[in-house]
Image (tube, rainbow, N blue to C red; front, side):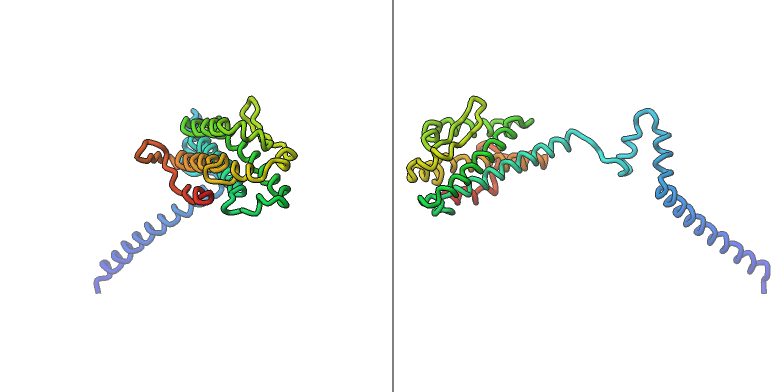
Length: 235
């Protein structure tokens, strides 16, 4: 037996094994360093010139604060208010809630109109101060639509002030002719029906803006995909 060759092979094998163990120890050491926060402290010390935050962001140790996140938050809020307006308009749909216009349901109707007016004011105010010109234009569309019905709305107790904010006098509403109220608030071509369409467009536009993807239809307007269900409520 070649004794020298045997021990040389054994020694080489141990060297390779030690190399593998060293790598394992290095990995464990790095893990412990990160877990104890030493890694972060070393980075903070190294990047004293204002690059600390950037380094931490890349390592996932710090939440990145950017204008994009602020914009997404803004658009998410706009979408929430616009959806609330659409939901409030649903409550006045004569197709879905025909009985709400019965004379004995005047209290329920007054409650639904009050909810709608509040939702309208919230959606209009929020979209009107949006950083998106498209959403501001849609908010202006809400205002112009309301102004076109201003005299009719006044007769049933809904008025608009100089800041374009709506208010409702429920006593005037209860005394108004039921058929007039239904025609103005409950049909597809009514004030509320058109408001719902605009709310759906604001909601869709805010969702598009939040995703960072701009989609337009053939006319160059924001796509209102998904709003068709709302339209059907007043058809």
